[in-house]
Amino acid sequence: MRLGQKGSVLQSFTWSAFDRGPADRVLDIVLKCQESAGERELEGELARFIRLIRWSNEAQWLCPVTTVSALLDLAAELWGAGLDRLIAPTFREKVDRASGGSDQVGYLNMLAGTVRAVEGRATTDIGELPFSEWESEVEFRRLQGFSGNWLDDAEYETLDECVTAAIDSEHPYCAEYLGPISAEAQTALVRKLQSPEAGASLGRIMPWATADALGRLLDIINDHMRHAHSPDCP
Image (tube, rainbow, N blue to C red; front, side, top):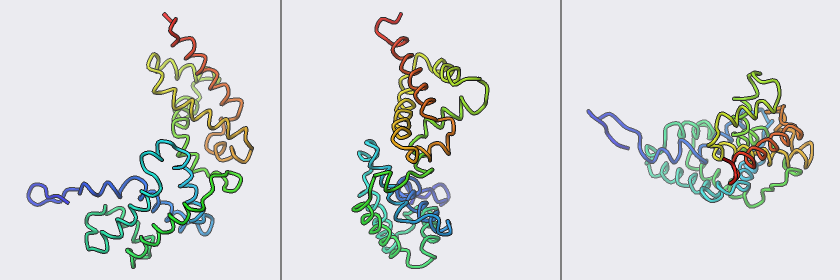
């Protein structure tokens, strides 16, 4: 914690380890389970959280699951040592709610142990652990952004017109924009074709994203990149 002018308190740099990122996500999952009236089960939701990390090369590289549990352990150590002021107030408030307002240190240690235990037996098989809507919202953020910007306002009559307009708005700087969208679209298409159940959660958040529509989106993007960005293109 730092002091500003006239003794005003400024945010501690350590707060960012807890008021955003994986430890905070875990507390959000806990609270949603507690508030779901039994509809969400904590072990299953943590397994989905772990699956998101395992399926992302970037997440595995930046923040493996062991780091998540370690952050929860660190929060417990700081709290137990009377240094909870180094933990973001928003995170402390979530811990208070999740623990019922008592033995926060014990609760954080228990939660860290639960994450480790679930990681040891968690499955990534969609057949065993159905894909949830919140997973789709995280995994397909770019595709949802494309949908919200170009498909939902009904400005264009066809998917082809929407995709072409989106490409034209970014050309010639297409790689940064189209790369993530096409990668997510390909993942979504594979999941749709794998089984109807596997693609059901995606269909609930983006009803337009049928196998045919995703395939057409990819065709238009690939055709543009081949013809507008080839070495022979003037």
